[in-house]
Image (cartoon, rainbow over all chains, first blue to last red; front, side, top):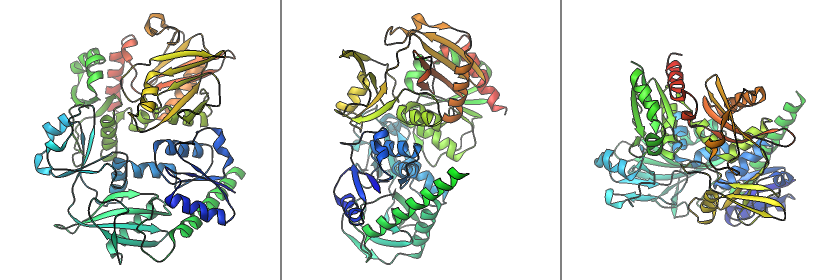
Length: 268
Length: 272
């Protein structure tokens, strides 16, 4: 079987899962933005793993699914999790809290934003993790550029958690606020309210694995989901099980289910 | 009185909707949401409009439409899905091709990697901003290679977050056919392709309806969730009509009584 991996890099988790599959006897090809051409040449693979969500890789996902080549995790949910406003709709549709969002030009922010909302967090609309994330304390922290639309989130002050999940196995850590996925964390027993959120999230969006960044607000004790991801690096997975083999296995099982459905559909 | 919300950017407000607004304000209340000055606040979704009409496709407009769709039942024309799929050439080509509608062959390739066809146009993959097609044409070994200045700037100068080109196979056509559709109404025109004569309006003429194009536009509207659109077609030497562009914010000033037709259509939609 030929497996394609759509990834921004050939190292880290991508390299590990490639090794795992090669040891299992599969052929694996990694496509990065440097070698990915999106046309019929991609059809030589049986299915694809969508590891990263750069635009070119998402395009490949949409193209492949339109041509009945399975993509895991699927492209639509991967895109929505990467798009912060779409992600907030996903979170709210489950009845969970997400931070208040503001979107506008510098001029609109200057004129319309209630300044008591500062400090806010500026983030790229398309993104996850800490890349491009900046704390904004006042209007002076903006680069005045009226062609730019700024995405801002209300800062939730509290305890920050990262909750990874693979199937029903949840691995939760406490972490410092506004640091990247790779910064040091402390493994904790998953609190029951966080477990409840993770399992509902996973079930609703039919996810095999992923992560949620959650903050327990100090003043209200409410949980806010502040970031979601369909394929983290698992660099802070502190639990016993090996995430690479587990993820490798659940992906193969999902592929087999998709193919069986396609066969049944084609026979009808 | 009916209230229509106009979601628009400065460019369209200043250049494209004078007559439309002039008419609309005589028959309904109009509120304007201007991309450059509107602050989207996710906690505020108490809109009191009967319908929204979108003239523009910028990031804030698109996300405001998503918020309205997500938090209210107020109709928006066109929907966020329609706007997104129209300005993203790659996605609409994938979708239309899958549905069996003829689109020119296309490919996305990293900068420096040739596409799998020899005569092509490099277009900007995300046609979200307000600027005109600026083609650079060259012939190499008898093959036509056209590139849009915007596409080159976006991919090579690194202004956007991608370093690839969207290639569309070149379709030689004597005419470019343009079909406007507002609700159930259709308007047919043809003009010399802009690659040959950039002044498209100079050669544009109204033509009799072409049933085949009408059927294709109906199908495209359904697939892309469009209510108001214009679709461009090129006709190959073997008489196949290829879709070359789909627009979610057509310039209806080019249709006779276009602003009134659109205004009346929006009012009609509020009564459904």
